[in-house]
Image (tube, rainbow, N blue to C red; front, side):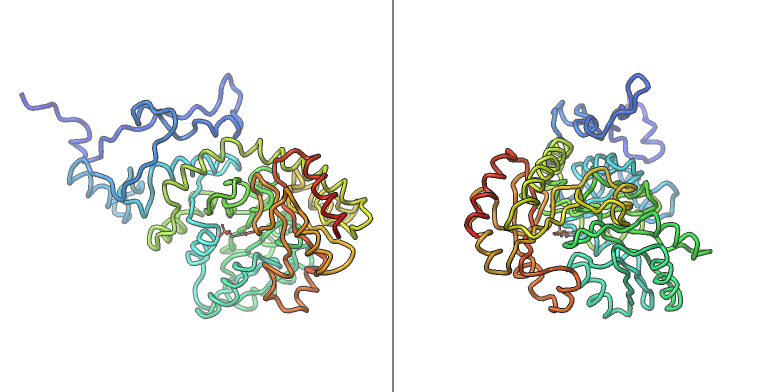
Length: 437
Ligand SMILES: Cc1ncc(COP(=O)(O)O)c(C=O)c1O
């Protein structure tokens, strides 16, 4: 007797088994991200009962039948509504990346998420999906240096213009910038970075959203924000009016200084064009890195909470040290200032990356950095270990002196990212390094 025809045979759909539905609440209680990081988006029974997802090292996926293959491509090309089902080719997606994307979105209650081979790959793919020649990008300033290069120098070669406003701008200043941009043609997007790198200045996302909504009657440019410094724990910009949130997952999300990756979260309709661009140019994260990120996300809340507590203790110590001019830390914003007001409305923690201004200049900064015994002398941030660097002489060496002065990137500035070590050991390290100055 021939085998009974399944529904899949009849419809041409792939009969690959579907994961069990995710458990998102227990007893009416919505489960928190820290809980969901252990299993969300993964059904062990689809992988031989393996508790942890295997790493799927494959470049392509087998179709059940020719009809199923056709049906898939009908979904990809839009000939059939509903989009593509299942997996077809690893430049588009894979199981490790899909699980990672499900879990990344959870932190911000986002409908959809995408992951990339670096933070810059995420930013570049989003920009390529959004701009056309003659468009204007309005952005807060300063931005991470490579983002500024991409917008100003690279997209400029393709006829894309930009206009910026300072990160701490008031509603009136934001209104003025957006009105000027409207006079230049189509505004493709409003791009924010908050806190800004390296000044730590906060952008008033709520004011940007209110301004955009008041000034744009028809097509509204999306508000995109790089949330690398405080996200996804201490700032959730989708709640404050942003449409797309970007990450260098290399930092707090990866958290162990052992991988490079990027992410984008937001509504599916916002992310679909970015997904299509990623499919075309192949900027997706690889399965091994995705697997490492899954491991990292399990401890994200623990790590970020500890790093934040450590930073608060270390900054309280450094603030009163006689060799310290001041500490640029979000926990020390001046009561009543507009920055403190933005912080109160947008942030739930001060992070663990801050600026230490020593009394003196480059010799004092270098003496301090060279004397550190626990903290490592390296750029980057958000790892389990404490890192320290000298922006004026390193990451921002090529920035013109006048711009450095405007951004407060002085020779006596040391950038510090606090890790999860014992806080008193870190204080002992900073004490002996300051003694050496
Ligand atoms: C705020 C910010 N955005 C984006 C990036 C770029 O990320 P990646 O190095 O993962 O490409 C960085 C890297 O330092 C960053 O600090």
